[in-house]
Length: 335
Image 1 (cartoon, one colour):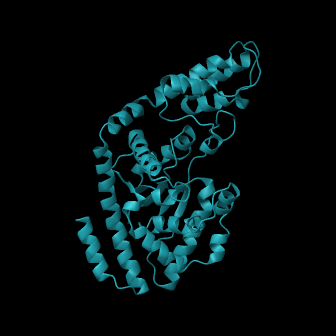
Image 2: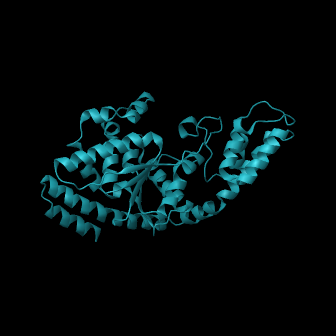
């Protein structure tokens, strides 16, 4: 039986926050032991919103450091930059020839981004096609995503099916795996998001982290007043880190009264500091030597590109494009 292939990408859009970690990254790390994982930094996708080359490079490096510090094991998962596998853009073009405009026009994500003021570029419009190529080029079986990305996986299924019917069956039809929907409120109670400016950074520490935690919005209850833990942002965030016993104990103190929000914030601060302490130190060590991370990404790209070239040999042959000379050039490049 062919081992299950798992694929996920993350855009280098800025500093990782608790919403990113509990909403996706934690699950991605856990999936390393459940199949062959391909995890890539989606720098091509990021070009739809980032047009500063220095920012893109820095963000890409930050994502690599974050994932490696948090437990991604390059011996288990293939970890690489999307742009280091140029075959993915070739496959995106081939998929474009079997994809109906109507399919792309129905993309909810595109409409929402345009409504938010992001320029309606061709790249943004064809984003689902490049995402499909990312998935299909490694002949992936499972794609962990948030609920907002399910439509893109369904579009990928449509593209793969159309290609297979038009030519021959090359691509497995991938399924989505919903990331655990952890409720991660931001400082203001809305969903934690960079766009709202209400985040708590995963690798924040010390005075900076304390200042951020202490700025969490609360109601006007006094220290003496009983409080409802189910309606408190501090308690919701604390629950992400605490054991069931610790959650029950804090909830009891809330309901009894006599505990102020300041004390609850101190408890949350301590939890965040302790939970990510080891990862913070590992990230600092990795950041001291850029060559270590670069070598990990380079080796990952070699493994990923070997798989991509194998897929493209099949795809080119299926559509009738001469493959021999191009394949020999690619093989020389990766030696």
